[in-house]
Image (cartoon, rainbow, N blue to C red; front, side, top):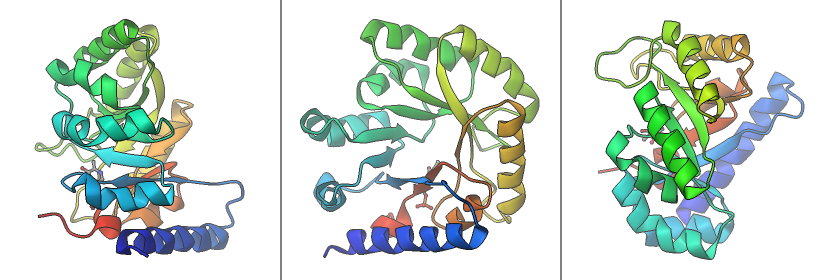
Length: 220
Ligand SMILES: *Cc1c(COP(=O)(O)O)cnc(C)c1O
């Protein structure tokens, strides 16, 4: 069995155990296998194993790697987890099913226009920069309400909020804050938890865990 499959199975069973310990019934988080930088030949082990959710952070790389595979297998769902430039939206919508990084009205508007043209509806997460880190994308918490309203008017299908906590801090507080915000705005899904902190995200019922290196190994 390929190492990436072993890794995924181990993560799945660990998640199941932890959910049991937390006593959360009917909670089934999805694992997005973040395959950015890895070649499709290597990723294909997990595809053949039947895994369906994959994450990429660059539009061109994702198109090159996934176009052919997705044409053959339309159960595979591709998640855009990186910064999205408005001039790449058209190409992004052709390959991605979910966009986790919506952080401006300009981007929301562009997605709205292009998805009309393509007659396709993507799933959206709004990225929140909880610690107001200068180098990170995402909106401030006091901007959520306004952007959500704009998305609603633009006919966007917003599932929930997404965050990327400061790497050198305990994620717990940030996950807790994002969960509260999600509840406050009656949103149903949460995109949070990575290789180093996905078990913590379970406590707050994250619905999409974005796990890369723990499945595929270290990126160069
Ligand atoms: C790369 C990336 C991940 C996965 O990171 P790992 O630490 O390898 O699990 C998750 N979310 C985002 C936004 C990323 O860019």
